[in-house]
View 1 (tube, rainbow, N blue to C red):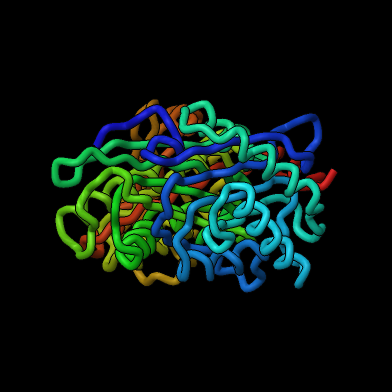
View 2: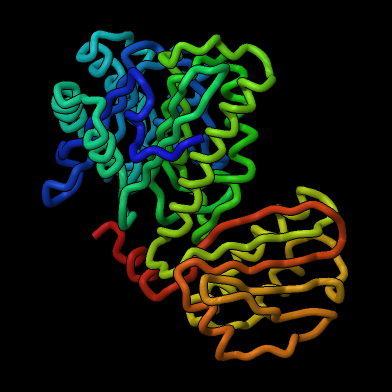
Length: 406
């Protein structure tokens, strides 16, 4: 695989655009469109919250029944808890977009992010669709504009792309995502759109996505709140010209590896851009008895508010990490646990043989002062491992969410 400088337009046959349609103040871009020149096989993973936004309900059905050719996304208003009117807005959006783009309304997906409750003014959606349809382009700049148009409290847009090979054919995959608050497994408050020019059967596309998400987006947390709107959509239009992947094997594995790389990179971007955060906090659990134990233990640590606050304070309060491991629900022997912290400033043993190691608080604080901090946990109970990503908890998180609607 080769890393590319790009986003959703890196794959052949995809175009994108981002513009200001009036949902947000100060002429900030607030609406995006993705378009494929040919129909795509599609797969999706959505929020597990019982309260689901209208676009989630709409898209879950669409990706399982239709070929997809376009996505329309707005930021600023979530179209969540909006009743029948919210679904009517989704239907009207697809009809207008389909007519404007000259495609079937059933081949259009919708996405929304922002404040829960308000109804979306359809005149703004209609204006945005007409505007964006005339701006669609396959260049990198258009991909970046689309990525910028879907963010809310994010401090920056998030996009990535890769080139890879299947049976001698050069293929591409590109993606954009948004998410900063209400980030918590399973799935998080995010919108993520992945576009590939690979030809692959829908059932295998869904299988790859459902598997990849377990160790990427389902292993991040910012604040423990699960959104109503999370949607992770993958579109594959086959424009690369590879023989359509119809069974598991080397070609499927190559695509899945590229999909994993994209999802992992974006997941870490989301965790590292948590609302108000100053550091990406990673927890690696090694030597767990089972894979599921490893995942649960790692997530328990990065979800711990006390641990997150300690990371913000550059305080090597290892007791908080041990405590989070202990209430995770996984059974283990605390006396077997070895705990290290690591960053670009070094690596340090904090806990071993059931008690504190002999370490320097000054060195520990220096290690924890970096922008990317890792807790390495060795359970010594088995051979399984997992990694989870979160961020520190700061004063600014409260400030951002105290006046989110202002």
